[in-house]
Image (cartoon, one colour):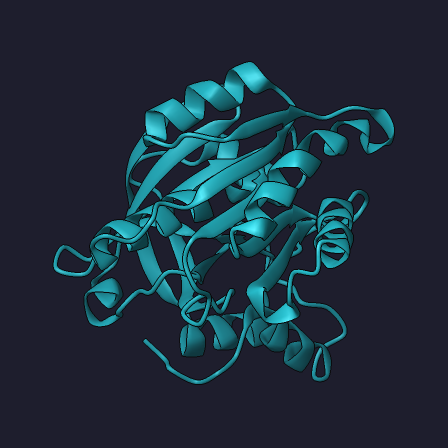
Length: 262
């Protein structure tokens, strides 16, 4: 695996300086050969209508150490079209990684790939690479996010278990379907402090305020992921509670009308 500090977005930008479009042409093929490795889908486990747990195998994973907060980027369409996933399990000895795929009724390349990928398929993978800097955050941790954050929640739980004696992270998720979220979280062995059913004008977010006040008083650190507007609202609320900026990390996964965010 290549250890140069680059990202899929860097590759796309570089290719656009030498080609009018990033297609499955020579520029894209060269970049894929230089920076990516092939993985085989070894199992696909449906957890609900919109969630699937995939296991990938690659010999390259046997030489890659994974730490909580890292990501995999997988090509899901023509050229360098990719989507980002947080490994929920990483077995370096076997060369396997498991990712949770959430399609959220996405008609784009990520949703199509998530719906149709099957055991035996191959894909091009970039990473693991850093996505969130979590090592410096003190326990206890609180993860605030949505369906796209479930994978990160599993990764944080596994890191806490391996740390020995660490307090398990707390979770609050805004979701489209509380029933489906409960089904998937149970299958993943996760518990949420609160599941907030999305409402018009983000009226559901006020339900998180009492939890935030209690956790801020306990000197918790906060990991904000998911929808851009959700992160902005949580960050403003934490600021009013005098939570220091060095106790907050954030990563936007998506925003309405925008595709392929990290």
